[in-house]
Image (cartoon, rainbow, N blue to C red):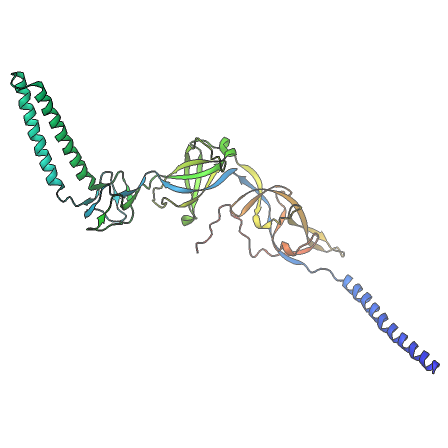
Length: 375
């Protein structure tokens, strides 16, 4: 009985020994097999780093503003009698836009003019009689005061009639008509907007530390989303005399030509003010940079040899210092030199020393002035 038990235990030990031994042998052999394998090459896109002129600049955002712009309104209440314009018309300064119904205003004016005329005759007659001592000086003074009061009433009535003739205060382009004939208007009701469209102002803000870098007459460029492929040149025309105490920024106003009347007041604008002389800097697409807490990096590609002496391409992680951005590009101030081959796509699957293949069939965007399609 004991002998049989010992035999069974020995059999169990042998079986488990074989199982664990096979497992260990299998692991060793798999490890040796994997050690003979090399990492497959990773496919990446690349670009050759080059130097290009880089204009230092101040970038800001602002709004397009009309040099002259107003909401044309009625000064007095009344009913619209005539409308003498169409929406979108270009009008000259002083052009009659609309009139309000005069009712008996002209009759009242005629009556007041007649009274003033009679008072003038009386004054002139008494003035002659004064020379013959036929009337007193007091009578003449009374006549003169009566005449002055009558003429003042005439002027007041004429002003009321003029207020019912709504005219353009300056030359410009009208907006969309807001009233109709026969409509009653209360004082201050808007009739139409009038904007002078050429030239235009662009108002924007810069940090207070930029004040030393800008001046009146300095050139700049303006872009708007509506015409993304066009650049509108202009010049700084004025700088505010005070800095905003809340934001520590200062308002700047530029004047730009709008000969083609493409721009409209109220448009959102991006402004670029060139400062200083251009520098030659290494520029790369912004997408090549990997931003990390311990530093910004890119991958470069260089030639190497494998264990058998065959040529291969290897990726190397390089720390860089970056500068300003413009469009799709970013300036590299340290870490990359002209001629270096830099990975532009596929860097997320790389590590230092990885073997790569280059496929540049699809190039990343690398324009200093990109024009994204309007959707």
